[in-house]
Amino acid sequence: VLTQSSLSLAVRPGEPASISCRASQSLLYSNGHNYLDWYLQKPGKPPQLLIYLGSNRASGVPDRFSGSGSGTDFTLKISRVEPDDVGVYYCMQALQTITFGQGTRLEIK
Amino acid sequence: QVHLQQSGPGLVKPSQTLSLTCAISGDSVASKDAAWNWIRQSPSGGLEWLGRTFYRAKWYTSYAPSMKGRVFIKPDTSKNQFSLQVTSVTPEDSAVYYCAGQGEAASLDSWGQGTLVIVSS
Picture 1 (spheres, rainbow over the protein chains, first blue to last red):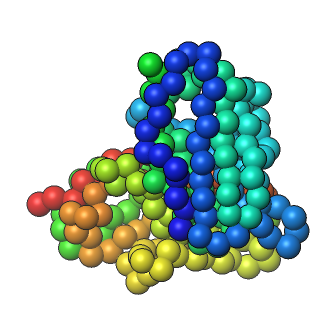
Picture 2 (picture 1 turned 30 degrees about the vertical axis):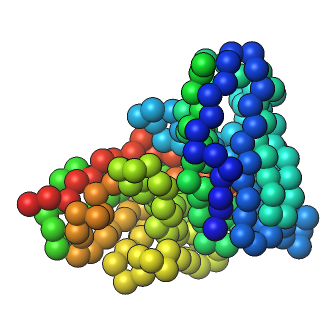
C-alpha cells in the first residue's frame, strides 16, 4: 500500500513544494534500485512519468523536479512551482503488483 | 518514441464483455525489453492496475488479484497491438481505461490517450 501524505497542496508560484509517499513494505530491491516512480496527471490527460527508480528524472522533465528516498519513504520536490505544474501527482510502486498512491492535487495560490 | 493508440467502444451493457485494443508504434509488442499494461481510473480518480503481458522467449501474462477471472490481456503480433477484455461487467467497471508501456526500469513511460467506458443499459 502506498500512502501519500496529503490529498491537496496549494503553493504560490516560485515557492517550493514537497509531496511524500510512504510504502507499507520496502521498495528497495537487491539490485540497489528503489522501484518507486512519480507521475503527474494534468486534466483530461493520462499520467506522465516524472521520476523513475526513486530519483531519476524522466526525459524532458525540468530539473525543478527531484525525487529522493529509499526503502519505504519517498519525497517528490519541486524547487520553484510554476503554473504549468498544476495537476494530480501520484506515486507508483512496481516492485510487486503495480499499485498507486491516492494522489495529491497541486493548486496554485 | 513509443506511441500507443487505443480503440474500442465507450458504452457496454451490464453483464457483457468490455473489449479495448492498444496499437503500438515505435516499439514491438514482442520486445524483450518492454511490458504492456492496462490501467483504469475510477470516476473518483484512483488508478488501478489491471494486468500486463510481455515476451521473454515466451509470452507471460499477469493480472491484478482483484480482477482475476474477469480480465484477459492478449498480444497480437500480426498487428503489433495488445487487447483487454473484462467479462461480466457491472456499473462499477465504468472508468477511463489506459494502456501503458513499461520499460526496463519498470516505469510506465508511454501511455495511450485513455478511453472512457461507461457500463449502462
